[in-house]
Amino acid sequence: MNLWQIGLVLITGIVAGFINTLGGGGSLLTMPMLIFLGLPAAEANGTNRIAIFIQNIVAVISFRSKGYFYPKIGLLLGIPAILGSIIGARVAIAISGELFEKILGVVMIIVLIIILTRPEKRFIKEIEGENWSIIRLVVAVLVFFGVGFYGGFIQAGVGFIIIVALTLITGMSLVKVNSLKVLIILIFTISSLLVFLINGKVNLLLGLTLAAGSAIGAYLGSIFAITKGDKWIRIFLIITIVAMSAHLWGLF
Image 1 (cartoon, rainbow, N blue to C red):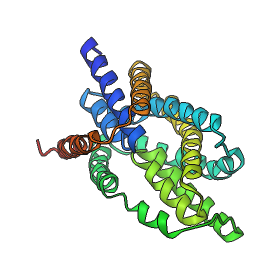
Image 2 (tube, one colour; image 1 turned 30 degrees about the vertical axis):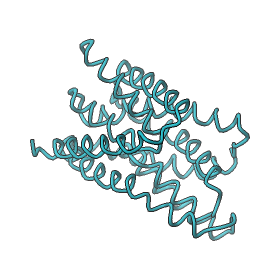
Image 3 (cartoon, one colour; image 1 turned 60 degrees about the vertical axis):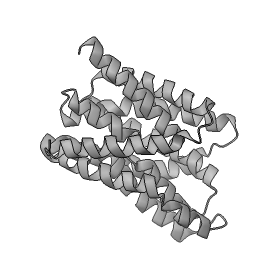
Image 4 (spheres, rainbow, N blue to C red; image 1 turned 120 degrees about the vertical axis):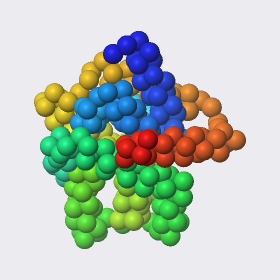
């Protein structure tokens, strides 16, 4: 990789980390960017996991320092997610790069719509009070196997899926949901990253560069109270993601 390509990865990581801090969807920028730099789809998918891994370690530590840390629930839902993520990662490696790029292009548009419309807010308002009945627990375990599969397969937008799932199933507060979200993602990212590493589908140099950029972006996003800039970030996301999705589908 040339110096300018490493610089591009670092800058994209900063932007993605910043966006993730404000809401989410950073992988919609990082994964296509890695593909555009010439990495095979499976390798781009695996390399992106390093940044996700580092980012969620920082997030878990941050939540824990503020008193929001629930390891028992995290492990309870993380175990089925681990199993799902291993299967999902193996499927991502097994399918052709062309098919994966087509799927990624569709997922990018779907997740972009979710980011812009935020439909989970409607569900969050409708549910009050935490409920962990046996039936809800069983449903949660089954759902998080599916969450893990999706996370292991493509990852992009999995945070939104977890927020909706935990809110609808358990009725937990949004702060608690977010703290569990980053913990569960951290847990199943370890297993999916190992699958990609074992199969030689991770570029360590680009992955660590991307992780460094994401950390910087997350820090910048946390210290600046952005309100007016949110509009421009949304516009940037729309233009960039639609363009990248169209490119993945070979439209230009």
